[in-house]
Length: 484
Image (tube, rainbow, N blue to C red; front, side, top):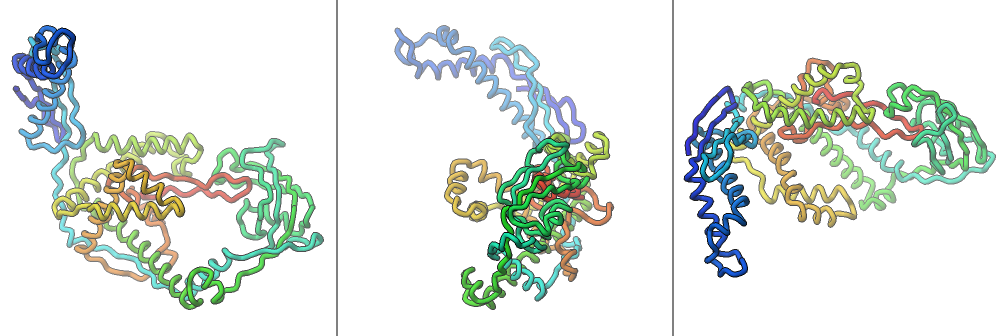
């Protein structure tokens, strides 16, 4: 086998490989002999089948096997000889006519992973926003818990509905006299003043009585989530079937016992702990984003174009799906396709760069994902589907690739935790609104394109889903994340 490097430009390498005809012929003959020892052909005992007959029957398939093996061996030899780490599967092109009497010639194009010089992780300095749990936050959470268990009772037919009361309605929405998808509902319990329907809808039902018909006229907001409804005038034929009064649930020990706690105080303690857990997670999310920003800024190296292309294609295909579904982010709507592609390619480049940096840090520090880590992740996934946990477990048991899909985000989180232990992390107390602010959506445009909080090392594009277009439910367009 003769291996010649024909080009080396940056991370791209190309080789010409020649396998002598005699070597191919020897391998074909050896393989035919192996076949002859086991094949059953009428009139011949196993191992006694003439080579010409074997060649006639199996020559083509054996040749394909031998060529494939030779190509794989040649590519592997070239890569190992030049100590390359392929970023993607090498591209092979057979340039000669394959045959036992002709040399096998082919080219191998390899794009190598770059050498990543990891920055001094101990030199990274970031602020981690924190917010102590306020008493008012706990009380608001308790009130919400109680409100979710509120009951209601029917009011007399002559009672005129007021804000805060529930109007049970049938409705049919029309635009220019024609019903539209999602514009119909029956026995819908609408709490007046809740703001759950399009502005102007609920106000027009104040004063309505059971059995009354009303024509409600509204204009869908310009930023309504469903483009075919946005900005359009609509009329709803509404039948008020019943008016009900909300019967508040008392915030007391009885409610606590209903929720599995001995007293209201023990429920309050549990709620505080849950809120504190949420604050800690939000705090870590911000810290991780700032850490990833520091890693992105602290590393500059050539990227494998093939990896960037694959990442970009994944992102762009999702952008196209969103555009076809009429859910393109408002910030993207006014941009040309070239502008959008340039923006999303920079995101792809960042994701690939961070993925390579995180992988290198993990490799150098022997960070690995254990079976216990995977089992814990599978259990967490199962808990997301109450009552169907066994189906989730069965899914993972039958789909090993799904289990492997959990590995990358777990690995990334472990590496991030490792770096946070080394970095200079300063806690800074902030207001709750700032802690809750999406770290992907900074108030100013100075933020560089970034990846998503979960699994930025090797993610798919983040979905920018809008709320489904309910008949008259509010649907606001979510601003494009600065991290996307």
